[in-house]
Amino acid sequence: MKKNGKAARFYLLIMFCIMYLPIAIVVVHSFNSSKLTVRWGGFSLKWYETLFSNEPLLEALGNSLIVGGISCLLSAVIGTLGAIGLSRLHWRSKGVLEYISMLPLMIPEIILGMVLMAFFSMLHLPFGLVTLVIGHTVFCIPYIFLEVKARLVGMSPSLEEAARDLGASPGRALWDITIPLIMPAVMSGSLLAFAMSMDDVVISIFVNGPRLSTLPIKVYTQLKSGIKPEINALCTCMLAVTLGLLFLYSLLKKIFGRQEKKQ
Image 1 (cartoon, one colour):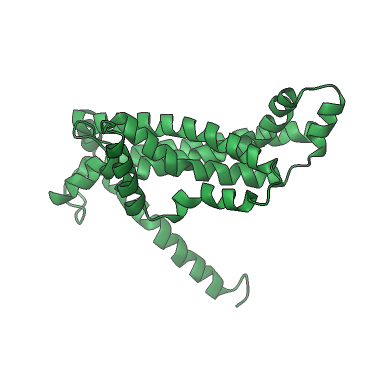
Image 2 (tube, helix red, strand yellow):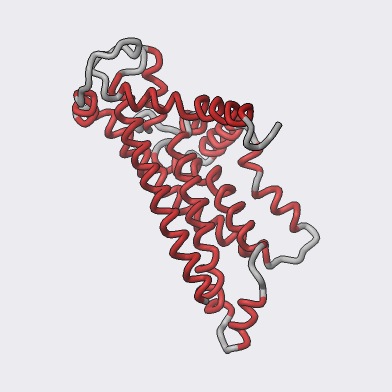
């Protein structure tokens, strides 16, 4: 098959339709005045008005943002320090430690959720915001760990050695040299971890309390009575925010890239 042939273009078109057509349908029907997705009732913003007047749904969104933000911050610190620490180890068990660090990605979510629930019950820890943050941090750490680890592999150790030769302490060399260079990897891993936290349902159900509801759980519970049209509006708003974050990330990546070239 030729790279620029008609078959290749048709295959690419089919793949784009499979990936992005459902998203486009959700966006279009968020402006549909009709409740039915099979009929177009005209352009309307009433579902956005309904969304911003739906207090339980907005409260669930706020809970998801809080849990995602805190867990992303904690996992960024733990994952970054873990990747830096393992990169400087020369133990024979280094590979085993790296494998253990990635276990939350390999274990099925339902098993991880049951394990966390049993662990919190054993500690007599009340289920709620704290358990949600801990649970989300556990499966968010590997995303940042892998990104930072890949970035550290591509870095030359001579950069820190040069800083040490010029009189910098190990901590100063780490803060002034290593941290700025791995910051794009930390940011990309943090964005991915935040997205996974906002999307999680299975683990959240196991470690969630009765008085707290995140957005994915709220949407999941509404499946019994059918998805309401304001959910389409909510998805469109979240998509817009995601695209904005991706644009911000690409802009910051260009800025960091220019700084690296100048150095």
